[in-house]
Length: 270
Image 1: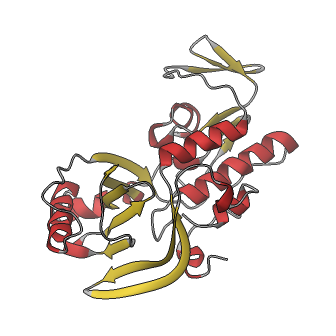
Image 2 (image 1 turned 90 degrees about the horizontal axis):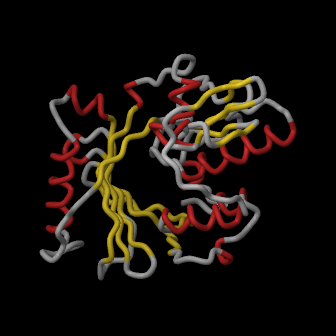
Image 3 (image 1 turned 45 degrees about the vertical axis):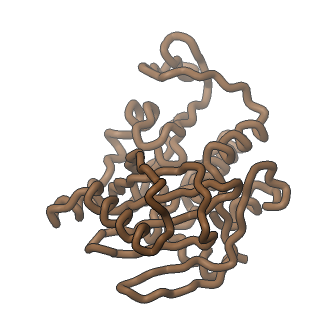
């Protein structure tokens, strides 16, 4: 992730309390060419990053699976248990706030749906560099090898689902091709027994509707992933900050200023 995340949060990477690994280059592979990109990026574990953000917020946390949201004259009622004046949907692609209040006015474009297979696991990796392979095996996306602090490795492959279907492909085929390449390059060995999980999310849309009255959507619920890299952490953080500012000031909440592309922050991280 980009150093701009820490700047947006008013802190520094050196103050991050969990494991963090700094990259001074990303290693792009494009049509057989290896292209090292000098940069400043970080790898973190999302479970730790999310825990840190929740702790920083000081907000009480209730674990509850939302089934029904009702709008009342003075706010919202969730499953008859919770009441609020402002409601922020941050539940990802299948967020119940999006489903209840936004789906009819902000339908998602199926051509922008990204599907991924990914696994993060403890592993004694030998190569600590970050690799990205673009368009391998006619993939409409890319695959990645991302070492993390504390002996953790993240592997994944992702691309546009509609394009894959038009080409008679599926994400599992691309995962197997990716694993074969990792083994040939000796980036993983025979001791690795894969068990990836699948995720789906949407790239940024034109003219997104992210506020309806006192209801808001942020992050993947708003579909903010960048158009070039499908990266969501930085735009998700910014969208959350924009929504909070709107609630505090009464100003309209929009995604103005939330970047649509990742490459500028890769090539010019400072």
